[in-house]
Image 1 (cartoon, rainbow, N blue to C red):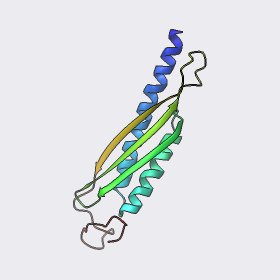
Image 2 (cartoon, rainbow, N blue to C red):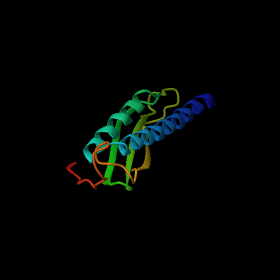
Image 3 (tube, rainbow, N blue to C red):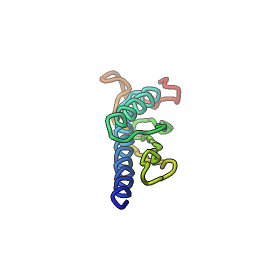
Image 4 (cartoon, rainbow, N blue to C red):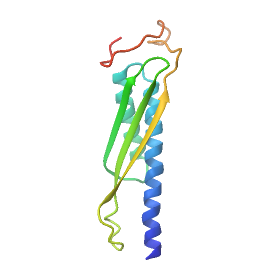
Length: 130
């Protein structure tokens, strides 16, 4: 019985590490994008790929990028929420699931241009237009 509790605790610790990593990777990828729309798409894609390549199975995984300060010198924040099922550990009779949330913020380069080599840095509007 003690071994089964260790397995459940191990699953939750591994899930926390995987979700933290996915949020960090997604925020970094979003900070490299050129527009807020591209940042949201990149964050979502990278977080989903990071979670898919790990042992954790999220049901569901919710990725929430925040590009409200998407300007040179600003930052982008990504929150990843993962619901991990515990009910499949049948011998322990642990009901339901555990929700794990991680948030990571990545800075946007102060001196970046709006297009590589084609102009000075400019703030972007929320819809992705320059």
